[in-house]
Image (cartoon, rainbow, N blue to C red; front, side, top):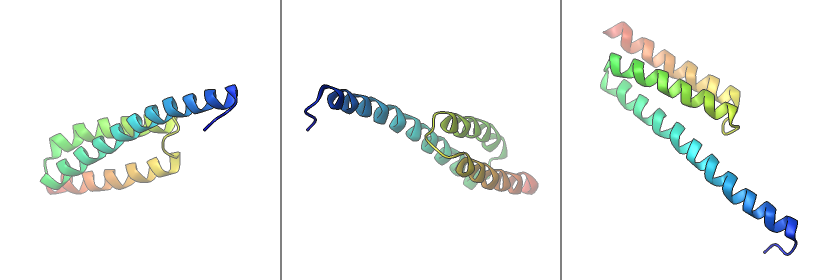
Length: 90
């Protein structure tokens, strides 16, 4: 356990930052899961609206430092490819 005042403060800050990061990560994962389910169902309209929300959540996660920008870019490219495949079928 921390013995110095500054170490106690850092411990408090870590707890609050961990809570914020967990909340942001959960939001991104939930959005990704919903988009993947919409794509699996083959519903193009729902998938398009969910794609916009997911891309927004991913971009915000980059701004907040939760995910790396290259990781998010890769996610968006792969999800967009899946979305185009569904749109082509419909």
